[in-house]
Amino acid sequence: QVQLVESGGGLVQAGGSLRLSCAASATRSSISAMRWYRQAPGNQREWVATITSGGSTNYAGSVKGRFTISRDNAKSVYLQMTSLKPEDTAIYFCNADIRRGALDLNAWGQGTQVTVSS
Image (tube, rainbow, N blue to C red; front, side, top):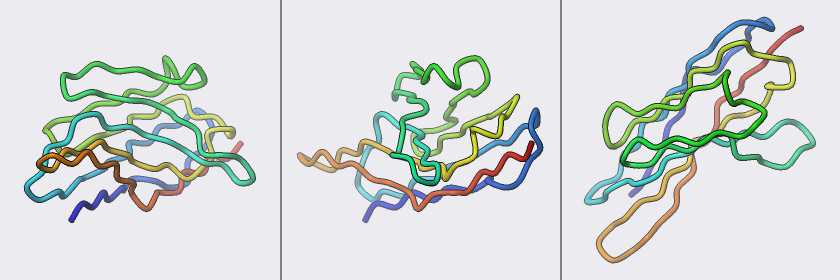
């Protein structure tokens, strides 16, 4: 069983900050890369940031310099969002690559709403 649970979303004014968290529970499994995606109303889901098991990070151009992805153990990932803009409003999803034995799996969380008011 693999489960990703996000938290930390909410309503914030433009220019403000939020910190999203994602906790993974994956029995008898290891997690490599973890990512954040977002989906705004009427839009396709878009990739936001990635962090590998070794700590390497990569960001979408629209968030680079404002968002920071981090992880403090093998199964938790965070997204620190600063200088938020109304266009950052979306449901934010956690995603992870999971290895269970010989199986490579990919899992999604249920999402957490972030709303940035102007």
